[in-house]
Length: 89
Image (cartoon, rainbow, N blue to C red; front, side):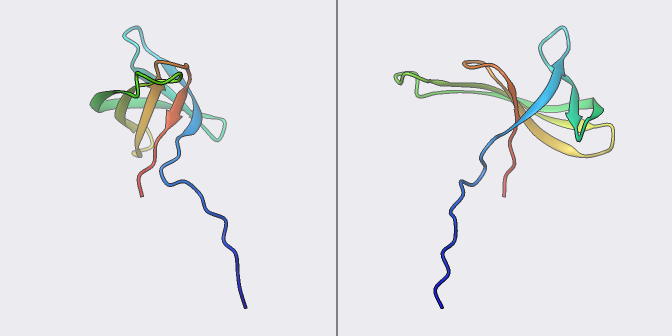
């Protein structure tokens, strides 16, 4: 029996709703229609890539801890706008 599997991209960013503080850092993340406060900004980094293309990549990432104890990697798309969750693995 032959089964076909649908391929999916690994680590594909998922759009999320978030609110930023005065400094542009994520302050609140909305998960399942619940507002979760960011209690710690553990790490931040910037990725700017493919500047020569029509749609370059410019993202400010944060590794945050939410009020429910979960750690999450999120980014703000500096080129196109919007907030995204990035999962690894």
